[in-house]
Length: 107
Image (cartoon, rainbow, N blue to C red; front, side, top):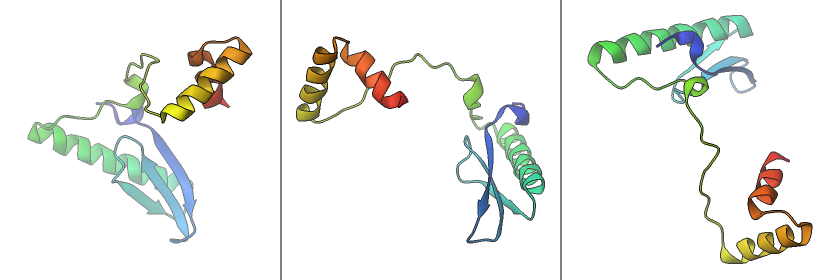
């Protein structure tokens, strides 16, 4: 797997007084550094090493989020009262419940 395909984020950590780099596909891993560039370089190196170890031991390697297929569908359970209220809103707006829920999630 290409280390460049994973999802990285660098943010400031006030608790540590340094930049914190994270990888969404490996939530338990992070890297602290004085600069954002050094933090990103550090987490990329960690991910590269972890991928090599996983490959060597035959472990399943996480698929990068950017390479996953998303169907555009997911299920969510809500209380019946909320379902009823949303269905009424959708009817009043003359849109499908799906369209209403999509608009609310996007907003």
